[in-house]
Length: 130
Image 1 (cartoon, rainbow, N blue to C red):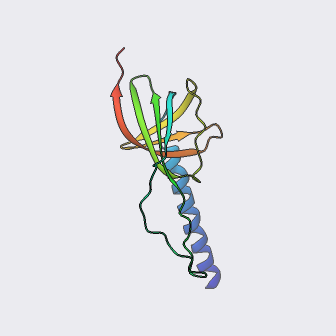
Image 2: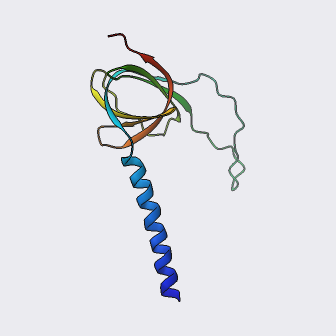
Image 3: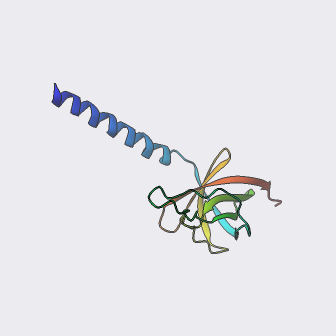
């Protein structure tokens, strides 16, 4: 009975992993070109500082930043945004270089130079005049 239960759990985990991997492959990838990259850091941050439970000293909260990217595809210019902390991995952007992207409603997935995917919010989509 125990062996059967372990086998069932392993099968469930394997199915879950395959579903996640298949979701990434189902995206319709297309080519684009980096046009702009900008990082904004607020000058003042208003928030309640959490306390360290061991020492009752305030914990330093990670600084927030807003990353804005612009990509041109064959038909549209996309303005993308990522609200992140300073320690969130950056996307290495070289203006004028090609980029792989997939659009899923209001979310855009971008592949960096190491083929890692980054999830960004689609802020604005403008048709290019040809």
